[in-house]
Image (cartoon, rainbow, N blue to C red; front, side, top):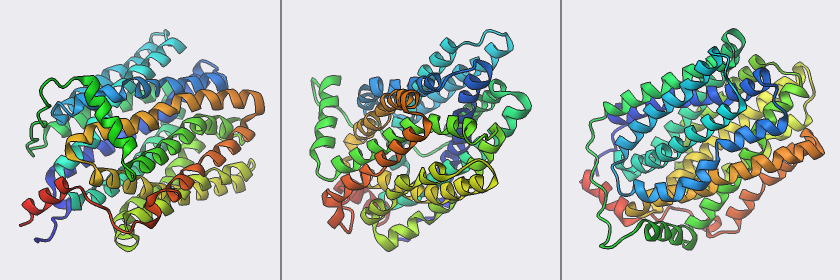
Length: 424
């Protein structure tokens, strides 16, 4: 077998990676800017900030399953381009409305909903598109590099968000995110690798039966089921605590927007290291063991925030804790996605990814609202402590599954045959 070509010399992957890095940076900028738009311009309460977070996840709950079936019937790259263009228009409405003095909670909620709907289509197509661009033996490295993009996005996006919010205001800062989607669309248009047509559907196949087939596979496969459920529990915890974490450090630890952005930017350096080391860790531990070990990073992430106090010492403690935790989390994300894609039949890839995203992101609005209510009743600190306990459950799910005794990935024959054909 010929030696695998380095992804650094894979032109089309580099275009995808570059465009996604810029787009992710814009998304991370808005992730910090939008709550500050609500807090600083509309004097939002913790519950209102949680509702804004929930609005961004509701389309994942409602639309993910039918989108997955539709993605398996379409070429993915064209869908991704159109979603990027629409995202640019939707997000651009926020700074426009702010400049006209017409910004309201109703618009913030509407933008969050519509932008999330396009994100459902884009992300399902994107995760299903990568195995088309890369061979099976390149997926771990590819996901590792995309994990670096996530951390790079945090460094540039949230680090830049703090400065931009301070200098030009939170609403104007969202403009950068709108432009980033345009850049991503151009990068996708420049990819030359031909995308094969989707597999023909059986005669008389309907959307409902396609969705049911995907659900039966995900919940019936003994390896796919715990992998997807653990991922959903991780996302539920993130949905519950993320917006409240921002409120907590802003109100209880007295951090400014710039300090919050700098903390996230510095801590994201750990994510870059984790993404770059993922392939080596996989070679050393094996993909299943790496997934089992790295999922613990989420349970440890909130502890520094819960024990820190206001001032420099607390600031350093939270930042260092995030740095270590995010390094481990990036390895988990790459391992989880690669494992799912390697064991999944190619004709079910879109529906598998959509079902996973339906469970993972569909749980976020439920937990965002639940944790917003808990923060109202119990206070921010106690609610974040509940989140830390919730983050320990995915580890238990994986340990209770056949993954605990698995050393190698049982690669689906469709991926194995493709790798052999391209490396005779």
